[in-house]
Image 1 (cartoon, rainbow, N blue to C red):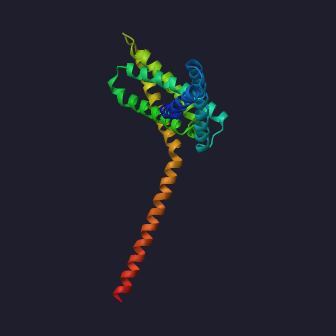
Image 2 (image 1 turned 90 degrees about the vertical axis):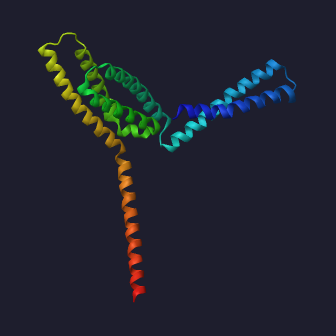
Image 3 (image 1 turned 135 degrees about the vertical axis):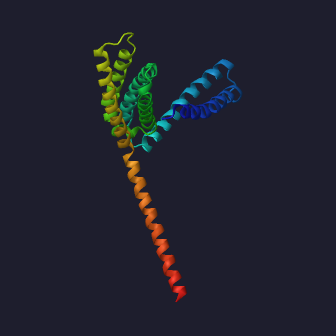
Length: 218
């Protein structure tokens, strides 16, 4: 759920409600300023909680999730966010030009998957391999590569380890790409179906035009 949008809606609903309650308490019921303010504040809290509950219910219904499922997904997304931030720091602290494209691809894919899952949390179930395996592996390997590449004096063993880590990161990048493809596979199937329908409609329209032209020529 978009936090900013949620905050904005709550603000737009809560503030006018609180002001209305204060005016009613102070002028209509002739209560003191402090009591009116306290009632207004309490009303604002109640309205905010109700608004938040309604928005959450609509969000869960839209994405076909229970509250328990959403809490579980949200917990894992929060943990993944911390890992991606750690990955981001590691990737940009590596001073190795030959791997810059690969590092940017890793960061782009991980952020894309995280962003899509936050927007549509039900996609989490199609991204479990990413969240429970590949993300941890890429963070660990990137940390290892960063550590080795920052050693002031390289030995043959370090060079071999760096090479092997680069190769493994290449394989992991392909795995991340497959994760992303798997997450959007339903969208691609839907798009291909719509394209086929559109092509069929166009063909049918063209066939109809051809028949009409043939009849006119006769």
